[in-house]
Image (cartoon, rainbow, N blue to C red; front, side, top):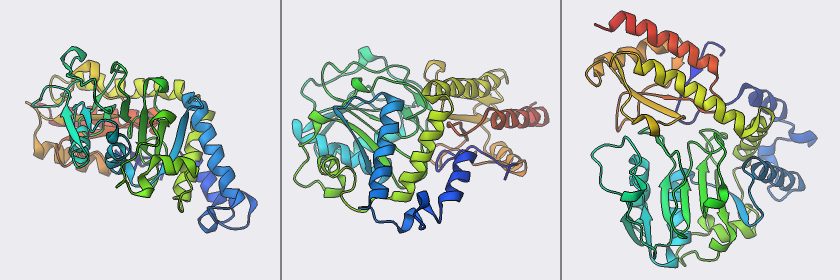
Length: 365
């Protein structure tokens, strides 16, 4: 519906062009006469599609040949286990940089498989990235794990940390394909599709080849990066429809200015919202320090001094009446959250801002 403006944190809005393409292909994929959902994952048709999507990923992120691109299931949380199951055996210990709720959950999961150290000082709230000088990194760690964008807390890295030769692993579930970055600075990155690159069901892992062949004996085959790489992500039946959607979205990104344009728009859209929040004299309050404000997920409170639950509920109710949906903050933190992923347009943001200004006029004292 054209009057709906979807700011959901995930599953998130998809480009309208992708829906048009999927509608055409749904019951007759690539001229085969059947749906991709009915097609064998061992067929030439799917094997070709699988290779094409990997090629798009390589082009967009400039991925060297010594990195493998894997398509797995289990979402980002699956990789909270997949990372230690594949990498922890190197030394039995890993460093986790805690910058928000998702990095806490990732560390908690990893503790099932080895010794996990918190590499950063404990924080009462997550409003920044602790200065690199305060990090306590173990040179013997199997890897250092970061969450590049905290979807719940709205904290995003503006730098790639130097881990002094220890492999850097990044959860990029909510900001992969929203900006250019140097993949060679990482040992592995992973991202679930239902934010910027598709729909739920597939998770992409990009891993340097020298980090393969180290999975724990107890690692389930479906989470084993080495087995997945050897089988070209067709170890078992993959979520082919979700992978097709991901491919469509990635090709849409490539046609529409690539990552340079996605980053430019991300800065523009997020700045429009943050600038108005900062001009609202505290009626709207964004807690994250300006340098580390996420360009993907914008959490804020409504009503002084730092949020009025009744007023926030009114905000959400009134917004939904105007087609502005999925604005409620995560249940763990409350408030409002605006997600401005690649598919969210500048026009969507403009409609939201008009609503925010009118709500301010009606309720600010």
